[in-house]
Structures are given as structure tokens and as C-alpha cells.
Length: 242
Image 1 (spheres, helix red, strand yellow):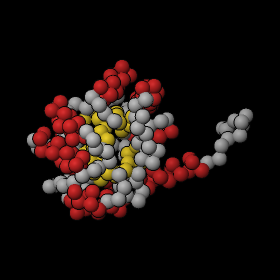
Image 2 (cartoon, one colour; image 1 turned 180 degrees about the vertical axis):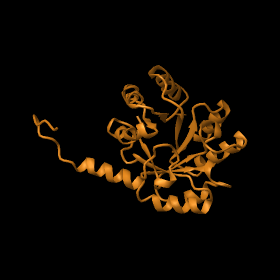
Image 3 (cartoon, helix red, strand yellow; image 1 turned 135 degrees about the vertical axis):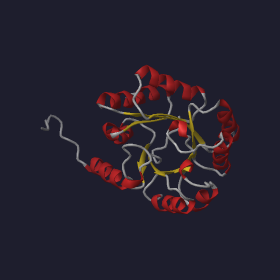
Image 4 (tube, one colour; image 1 turned 90 degrees about the vertical axis):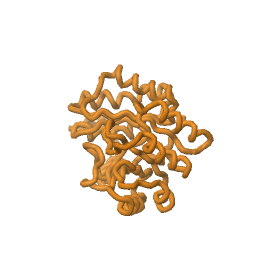
């Protein structure tokens, strides 16, 4: 099983131009375990400047419009940037589960013998499907050769949140690293809880104004909340808190 407790908080950078994106990635790397570079948000995006100047693990994503991103160009060009990331030694690349089979094969060929890990992801920006549908997505990720799976849905109430977080039980039974949480206001708690429930990683924003998904928390705020929970003394046995 691929699991690293050191790579738990990923900060997503989605600036519109290379200079500001590289600067943001470099500055935020001190608070992040992993920095995600949203190539689809950057005009004339390149991979090498990030690999040359940002310390720490980098995750490259080039999200298409059909899965909530902004990349609207040819599929071959979209994948070419991810191939650059693999060849440059990136820690992770993220490909959508529903991407064309040709795109997956190109990346798998490049990944052979490399240290880059493949995240296969599924996002639903409207709702949270049934448990059966979520497990089906999880199975497909394994079948297609993902090193890490990612399932993120929109939560409308706590039932949605619990359904997604319970996927960690299924993932653990399969010995499969999984990123799973919910978007939206109802899903905010899941971004924190997933780390306590075996989730491989959670995602934060550079700051409150730069969220790349609904409900994303600024990394400084996330770290503060998490630190409070870690420092809180354990409740003595038998003592009921009201």
C-alpha cells in the first residue's frame, strides 16, 4: 500500500499567470505537504519552472472543462503537460477517471519506471451519488491502475458527507490509498475529518479568496484548526461532556 503520513495537506494553486503561480507555489510550500499546480488555470502553462524553483512534492493537474476545470483545448495538448510533469520527476499527476483511454495509456507508458504516482480522480459538482455508485468508481480506479484514488462530491447534507467518508472503510479493506471528501458548505467538515479516518490527503486553498473548489479552506486556517484538535487533551474515561 502506498501511504505517506507526511503528504497529508495539499494546497492548490490556481493563479492565472506563470509568474504569480510560481511565486504562490514557492511561498505556500512551507505550509503544504504537497502543492497542487492547476495547470488549466494558468495562461501558457509550463511545468519546468515549478519543478526548478519549488521545494517539496508537487502534484500537477490539468483539469478539463468537462470535469469542472478550465482547460478547453485539444486532449493531446492537455496530456502533454502532464507527461512533462512525469518526465520532470513530479511527485504526483492527477488524471480524471473518465479521461479517454488513450490519455490514460500515454501516461501509464510514461509512468513505467518513474517515481511519479498516478491519482485517478472523480468529481461530482452537483450531488453525492449512492454508495453503490461511489464504490463502483473506486473499483474502476483500481482496475485502471491508479496508485491513489480521489473521489470528491458535492454535499447537500450530512448524509452525503457520511456516505463519502465511509468509503475509507472500503478503501482500507482493499489496501487502496484514497482521497475522499465533500465540497460545499455541508462538506467542509469532511475536509478535516478525512485525515482522521484514513484519508490519504486533503486539499486546502492558498487563502480564502483563492479556493479552487467550493468549501475549500485556507491552509493557514486549516492548520490552526487541526493544531487545536491535536493539542486538545484526551477526555478522562467515564466523564460525560455536555
